[in-house]
Image 1 (tube, rainbow, N blue to C red):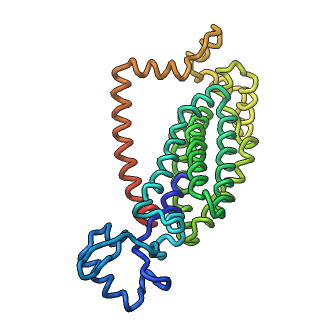
Image 2 (image 1 turned 90 degrees about the horizontal axis):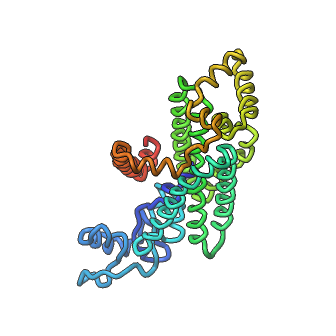
Image 3 (image 1 turned 135 degrees about the vertical axis):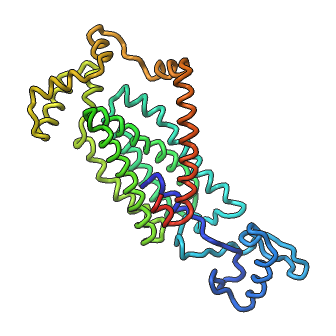
Length: 334
């Protein structure tokens, strides 16, 4: 929900130059109707939204000198309409999303942290960062100054914190048996999609980006208790030599699932990666994240597969983003 709130809370509605203090988008004053009709008949799409006639007889244009007026029926109040992030300022809107994407690139770092500190601690740290970033941003949205700057900085930390989704996926797959991993991964994906649907409904009903962010703040607060609800990855614990801690987690899982404890423990241990068990017994270091990347770069087959995955992912994301940025309904369906 936090990831894609940008597209609704910074949505760009239809707009044009404000012609007078009492001007409205749908019903301009009678004196300006002829003016607007002439503009729409002769101007380009950009000029219709970002310029006005300097002299109607010569059909010359000038920038909007009284600001803009927006069609509030689609998105309602957004940060774009409040800070007038259109026309010559539209790059600032794009900048906030680019900064967010830079934060998401921090998944490389969170992967290293998850291997060193454990999945559970890393997830909790990222959740705390997300809550702090959301609350800080929410407070500064009511500030008359530096609103966009603080919003952009907070979006960076939100992008970094949202990478807990990938760490959660790793934890989920490591704690699930091989026969149920596809179901577990799909369940997490369905939850992600459900969050987008809920976000579209909330944003459509409220039509106020501040209220929408308040809703997101309330939504993420219960995640503060996630540390006592999720266990550490037993596989990671075994890799670190903390076998007794892993055994306690196994016992808890089998107790809740009402499964025979002794047989299940033996089965689970038998399915642990043999190279990890051998590394523990021989007291060897398990390959680090950087060593894995090095091996990846040395393998022609793996490099080819990675490039293909990058290309497919880029196309899928482009179509996906293009769809849900069009309207609420496309966002809902995407």
